[in-house]
Structure formats: structure tokens, C-alpha cells
Length: 121
Image (cartoon, rainbow, N blue to C red; front, side, top):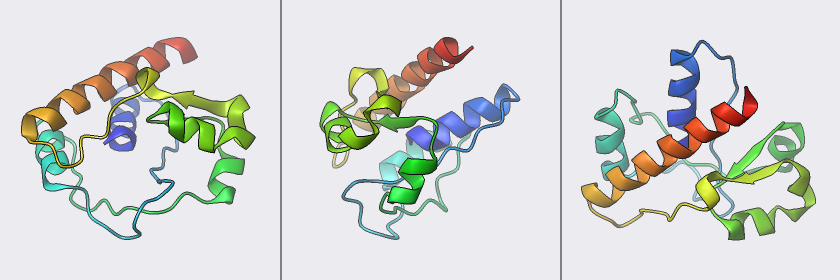
């Protein structure tokens, strides 16, 4: 959800970014969860084509900013600490939660991305 929300906000703001989504322990090729699709559809973001993938060294090396969802993810990427940011101080994975849990997560992600935008201006 975070990458899709960031791309959406950037396009609404006419900001050019390349924003990719990848996980440290992601199962390759999995679709976004149904509840993620539902809550993103509510704000005009289409996750139907999203597929999970593993982060690669090339992605990390070529990135200007690496945004993690938790401090433990950031710790695992300590080699890139100079360009790692924990989104919103850490956002709990909603996996397995109901639509309300995903909606809350989406809104926390959105607010945290707004904070990043302000810092980068």
C-alpha cells in the first residue's frame, strides 16, 4: 500500500519519483491482499495488478531513499542506514486484519507520506 499511495500522491502533486515495493521476506508474485485492494480502491488507487517481490541489492544500492515499515526492517538494512527511513516511526503490518484494520493502516501510511513530502520540500 505504501508504494502505491506514494506514487498516487506524487502524481497528484506533479512530482516525478520512482517508487518501488519490495519485501525482505516477500513471497514472489503474490497479489495484494483483498483488504488492501478494497481500502486502496476507496481512495482511487488500484492494487489489482500488484505482485510481491523480494528486495535486491541492486534496488537498495540504486535508491536515494529506502522507506521501511518497521524499525526491525531498518535494522536488517543497516548497510544502507544513511538512506533508510522508518515510515511514521513504524507501521504495523495489517496482514490478517479486517477492512477497518487495513483502512487504519492506509490512513497512517498516507499521513506519514505527507510528512516525508514536507521534509523533502
